Image 1 (tube, helix red, strand yellow):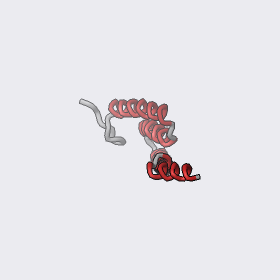
Image 2 (cartoon, rainbow, N blue to C red; image 1 turned 180 degrees about the vertical axis):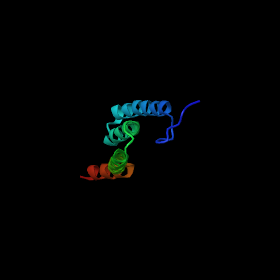
Image 3 (cartoon, rainbow, N blue to C red; image 1 turned 180 degrees about the horizontal axis):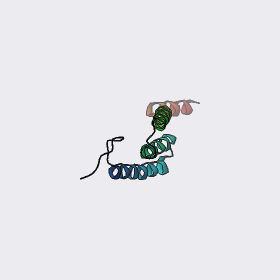
Image 4 (tube, one colour; image 1 turned 135 degrees about the horizontal axis):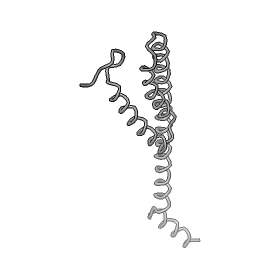
Length: 122
């Protein structure tokens, strides 16, 4: 039977497994997308292992503060990425609308017929 820590609800072996899997997945995500918040999450997850290093209260408070700061940085950075993605999507839609309007204007058969009539009368 696995022994549970009083300090942390997960057994150490399961916690290490969780951390290893999380680090691998976040490294792959960062390699693909290059978002800074993925690095913040990576550091936060790895630093949870420090809970086993020292049993003194000040270290728990320092670790808790570090985790809150990393969480705040992650949320702020995710919001920036989300805003930038929304702005890029809107710009892409605007560009697509402008392109379709230009295509419609260039291939309008009524305009072509009118232009041809004007050229013949001159």
